[in-house]
Amino acid sequence: MLPLLSSSTLAAADVVAGTRHQTELAVHFRRPHPDSPGQLLPGAPGRYLIASLTKPIVSLLAVQLAAQGRFWLNEHLRTFRPDFRRGPLRTITLRHLLTHSSGLPDMLPENEQLRAAHASVADFAAATAQQDPAFQPGSAISYCSMGFALLQSVIETTTAESLPQLLHNNLFALLGMHNSWLGLPAANAATLLEQCLPCELPLGQSPETDWNWNSLYWRTLGAPWGGMTSSAADLGKLLGCIADNGRLPDGQQLFAPAVISASLSSQTRCMAALPAADRETRPWGLGWRLNWPDHHGCFSDFLPESAAGHWGATGTLMWVDLASGRWCVILTNQPFERSQRVIQQLSNLIAANENTG
Image (cartoon, rainbow, N blue to C red; front, side):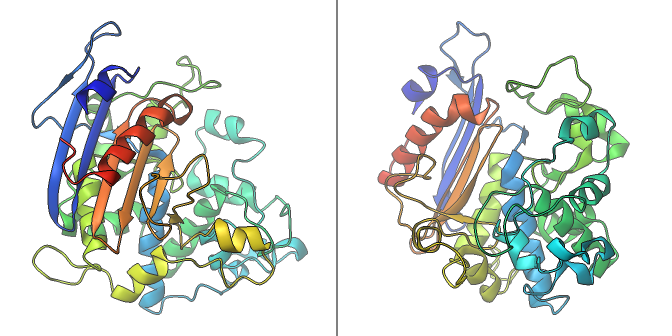
């Protein structure tokens, strides 16, 4: 594994893999300066901005709330938001948000202006309500980050609690995920930010802006589509729980088995209006994407189609295979377009081999 990491351009990477609650691999790689070959550090986990790995975690909470009878997934968004009662938006459901089939935009046309104005998640949701769907909801799949701003408003309306606090109380604290936050807490955000790995910025994000990935604004916003800070070890605890059908290491049931099954199995195969290719070869669970073997962004060449996970734009990947109980987390601080190749190689190495050290 070290040769793969050293030959890459990565400055930092944390890789953790295991089976159910057993961690079998934990690698922490750092390159002190660009010309350094880099080295493996013992027991030095980093805190990363995990980008869109946030989505399936928020989705788990949403599906758990549905299992508690708070709402149902085919319920219309207009039930919770009056601004979705106008014609083109009326038929959008919570299921559409969770399966990226709403027709709403991934990012808003005024995305940069909103960030520059330090907009809240509620502001992003309100701006999304002004958009018309690009297609009839449920008739196509188009990746949609803004659907998660809307999902947050539904969760908070039905629970009367903030999404970051709900995640902390109902997931992070119970799993011992002590390095995980949906938005760094305001009370000590500046200090925590100094203890997080900075991201290499993608094209279009200047270090001079006060809204880029490394800014205090972005790290504290808690965007439910990509604003979570976590560590590979913390995410491994979550995936271990999922791999054990929702159980904690002590056997306590954290997620109902039905929540795990629904979240990580294809929810798009029964959507009759979808094109056959989307139903059969590009399946989505509820916030979790299944493995797409013939796609450029498959999780690994050596995982079954039923494996589920997600990529993140900051150079992150996690997956879990319920059939075998195996899971993997790969976190880097280099944008996906520059880190994908080495992440795919690492994922293949782990998926194809029992001993990956």
